[in-house]
Image (tube, rainbow, N blue to C red; front, side, top):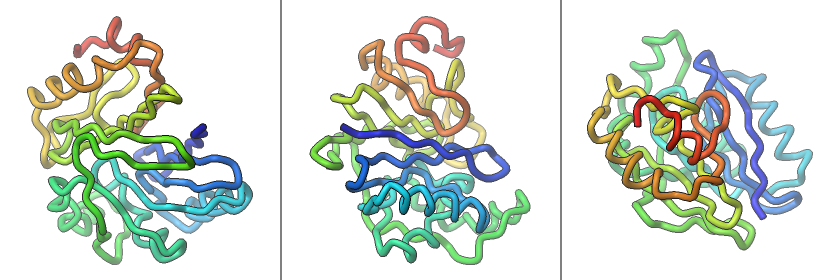
Length: 211
C-alpha cells in the first residue's frame, strides 16, 4: 500500500508529496522546495523513513512546482518525469522565478516523458497517469486505484479549479479534462491537490461551483 506524506513549500504554499512504503521505494511529486530549510525538511523525512527515492514526478511544470528538481536529482541520483507538453515551461523557468522574487540558478531538466494511461509502479502498487490539460498543456494527475486517491496538481482543488490565465492555460480544456477524466472516478477517491486541503471526488462532483 502507498502512503502519502504532504509538505507545504515556497511562498505559493505549494503541496509537495512523497508517495512511499515505509522502508521501501518513494516517489517525490512536485518538488517545490525553494530554500535549504525546505530541502532539508524533505530529505530528513526520506532518511528517517529509510526510503529509496525511485524518481521525481511533476504534475506540471509551473515555477512553484519545480524549484527543487535540480537539487534532488543530484542528491538522490534519480530521473525526473513529466508530460512533454510542459517542457516549454521549463525553458521559461528562470524568468518566471525572477518575476516572483525566487532564485533558480539553472533550468531543471526532465529525463523521461509521461503519457496518458502510463503506469508507474511503486512497491507493488500502481499509479495511473491521467493527462488533464487546461491549467497547463502538459498537466497530469496520478491515480492510485487500489488506495483510492488521486494527485491532481493544479487541475482540481477543494471546491475550486486551477487557474487558466497562466502560460498553457485554457478554461474550456480544463473543465473538459476534469469532467471527462476525473469526475468519472469513484466518489470515495481522495483528492490531493497542488495547493490547499484535500477533498474527495464525490464532494467536488456535488459542490464544486465550477463543475
